[in-house]
Image (cartoon, rainbow, N blue to C red; front, side, top):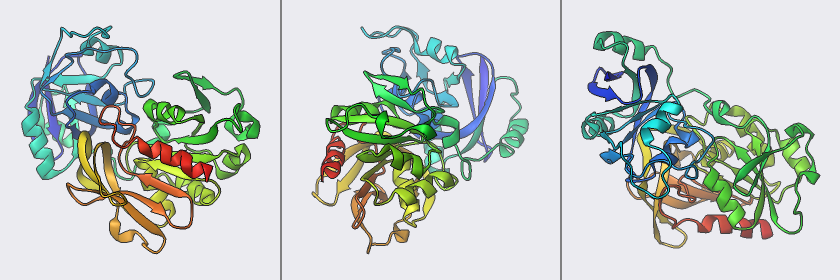
Length: 378
């Protein structure tokens, strides 16, 4: 089915839908990973975005029930060069095409993804529309200019869990009580495991798997949970998750983090890194085209080692806004010298901009989960 991708600056890309008709708006970005398309599709950090895969052949190993990072596909649309309709993998239970159709996600192929990626790198990530219903470029440009922007929009409220749950044997075990009525008895393994309250700003399942792997009992709470409730639960540590979009509109989370500083050890990843920075008085800004892929080089300034990392974010902490009297810069991006991690000198709090759980991606930064446990032990 004929379709058009139209960017807000007027650039037009003809393509074909392989999931049926539709018209959808979002911010168009690209991901440079060669594999992991199922994890990318289900990553809540992509809420409100069209993801373009730079690797040309997608779908070749199919879809399985296990490689998901949330309970549904989160991307607004999926853009690829070529869809493989006949996957070959012993774990595959369905095709990429059927998976996208079941979730009603508009997806296109036969698009020049190399040209689109180069355009985004030069012009920046921007609003776009994909349509099979309206093939008039002038009409579509007018529509996309009237669509909502990512900046200034609270996307966390669209992806966070509505009820608290425990992560138990790779499933979400929802709590019967409302989160505001929970106390210290919510944990079952006090004294035996490290007890962690994880804020769900768009959390990936592999983060929960990674916390459990290092001996934590995890209770996941909605993003709007206040500091008083967390204190009543009396955990050993607090985790700030990844999530979509602009961190600055998530004022309720920033307010809560401010109150929790110094209460218990805090570990943040991706959006959690930005929210921790904002709680400490830093500023954030939108990157030109973001970091999305599994091959971002990051230097650990403490050890001097370089880590190849998985990343997915469009905003970053402004280095100039960091008060170096209070924080230590621990990690830097070697591609563009943006901040990739810091820790506080007074409070037991640290965070990184990249994804140490790396699903998909390299596992070189898994040590950070063990560092979190050590911080709780101290």
